[in-house]
Each structure stands twice: as structure tokens, then as C-alpha cells.
Length: 147
Image (cartoon, rainbow, N blue to C red; front, side):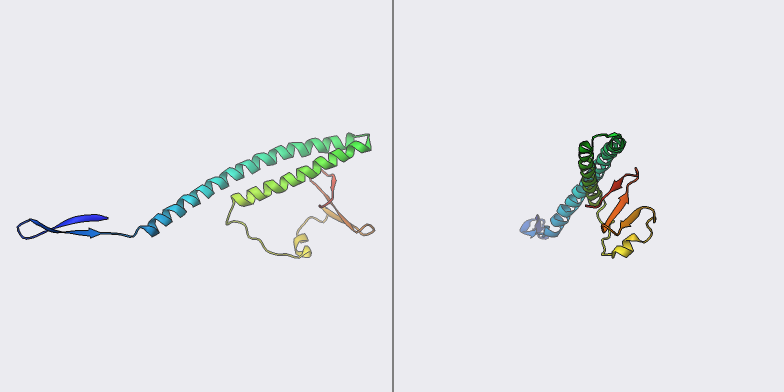
């Protein structure tokens, strides 16, 4: 609020004028801007964490891939499979973090399985009709089963 004097011809104050301005919109816009800036910073942080986390998962996956063929006790192979599953779940978490960090750049749409498979290297996935299961090969060349 601004209060100003009203003067007559002799310069004497004869009244006051108060001007009020509703700042509700401006205050709300500033609040939204601060919130947007916070979310942008959080997105950058999430992206950095996701990349670092993926690097750690890559080392773990590499170690498991090297260990798996050297195991002579089949009961120990289950532990490697559990570790590979955990790496896969961790990669999903990292992917969600990356998706969050790129808000507005991701477009989700429903696709059929045939559409999703188009363009994939034919050597990547195989179908075992006897057991009706799909098998996929990861980049290390070890079989993985979808969850």
C-alpha cells in the first residue's frame, strides 16, 4: 500500500490517498517459479545419482558375468542369479530416476508386442516353443529371463 498526501493550491495537506494493489497473482507466480526451480535442481540431482548408480551396477554385472561360468557348484549359481536379478531391479530404479530427471521429454504410449519387437536385432531374442518361454541375451552374452 502506498499513501500519498493531497495538497491544495497553497501546498497544505488537505487529504491523503491510499493506493492498494492486490499482489496475490505475483506472489503465486513467484512461488510457482521457486517450486519449478527446486524440481529442476532435484531432476539434475536424480540424473547424476542415476548415472553413478548405473556405473556401480555395471561393475557388479560385469563381476557376476565373469564369476558365473567359473562356478563348479550348481548351488552357488543361484546366488549369481539372485545378484543378476537385483542388478536388473536396480537398473529399473535408475531408469525411473532418469525418466524423472528428464521431465517433459518422455512420451509414453501403448504399443503391441509386435511393434515393440520391430527393429530389434533378430539375434537378440529367441522363442522356445516347447516351453513357451522367451530367452534374451544381455550384452555379456548370458541368458536372462524376463521377470
